[in-house]
Length: 66
Image (cartoon, rainbow, N blue to C red; front, side):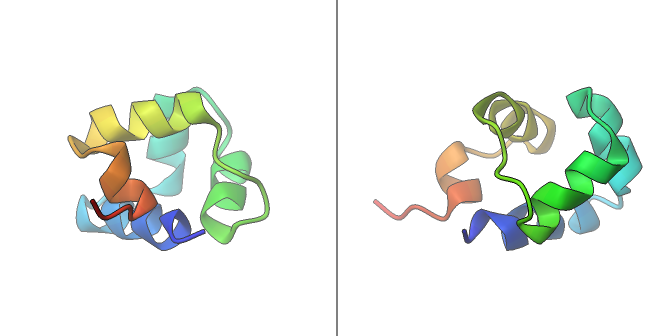
C-alpha cells in the first residue's frame, strides 16, 4: 500500500489540509484521514479524482513502474 505515503506527500507538497481534499472528494475529513493511515482502502473513484486534483497519473500514486 505504497499509495498511502504518496497521497499524504502530494497533499502536503500542495499545502492542502485533509479537510480541503476531503471536500474536493465529497467525503469527510475523518474518512480521508483513514485513507492516509491505511485504515480504509482508497476507492477507485477517489483515486481518479486525486489524479485530477494533483495532475498526476494513477501509476504515480500507486507507485507502479513500467
